[in-house]
Each structure stands twice: as structure tokens, then as C-alpha cells.
Length: 154
Image (cartoon, rainbow, N blue to C red; front, side, top):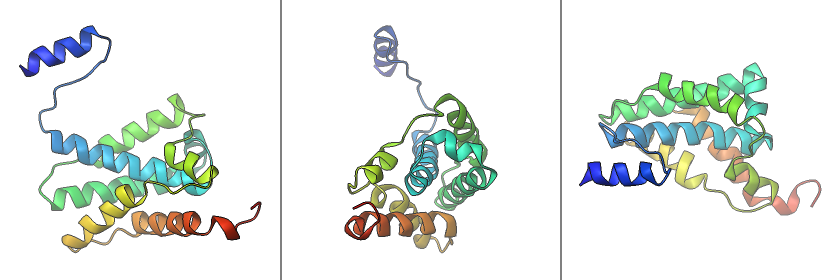
């Protein structure tokens, strides 16, 4: 049945893959989102802006490493290298793309930071791992989204 679904989606031009371990894919996607969404939101820029500056790249890569470490501590063999490779591709292919979290900040809306970075922070605490980059971006975005009324340009 899985093969039939896979073939039907591909026939409908909805390209998909059958994952060997969906939990690895879920954690790697969470790591990617925690890295690119939070950095673009704080910087209020597109994906390419993060990739253009070495400090932006390293910040995103450090978040990816933290998330993979947390996943591994939970028994999921997520790869920081795979997340970083996806980020590097995104910096180029989606250079002008504003993530949903960046769009939310630009439009002064609540973001999904609690469900992404906040969830990673909580999972890290469960296994006693410090995730300072992920936690810092989480805190910064929470401040931003809770104080739109006090920010310049309001």
C-alpha cells in the first residue's frame, strides 16, 4: 500500500520519498526549521541574508548541531551534516525567500517559535543538554513577538 501511495503521489507530480526512519527525517526537518526560521526572523531578512554572512551561517549551523545532538540523545540518529547541507542549499536556491517566521515578525504576528525552537529547548532539558544557540533565538523571538507595540516603527 505504501508503494502504491508513493507511486500515485509521484504520478501526480507530488514528488516524495519513502523514509527508512521517519523520526530521523522529522528531527532533521525540525533542526532545519529551528535554524533557518529563527535566524531569518531575528534578522528580518531572507534565507540568503543568513548565508551571505559568516556569522549568520555559523549561527544556523550551530543550531543544526544542537538539534542533532538532542535527537541523538533521544535515540534518533539525526545528522547535523545533513541539516547543514540542506541549509547551505537553501541559502542559494531560496536566497530571496522569507520564511514563515520572518514573515510573521515583519507583519507583527505571533510566530511558531514555541512549536519549533521551544520544543527543541524542552527536549534538550529532558536529557540534560544545553542548547544555548537554540535557546537564545527562542528567547529573542519571544521578546520580539511580545513587544511589537514598543518597537520602533510602531
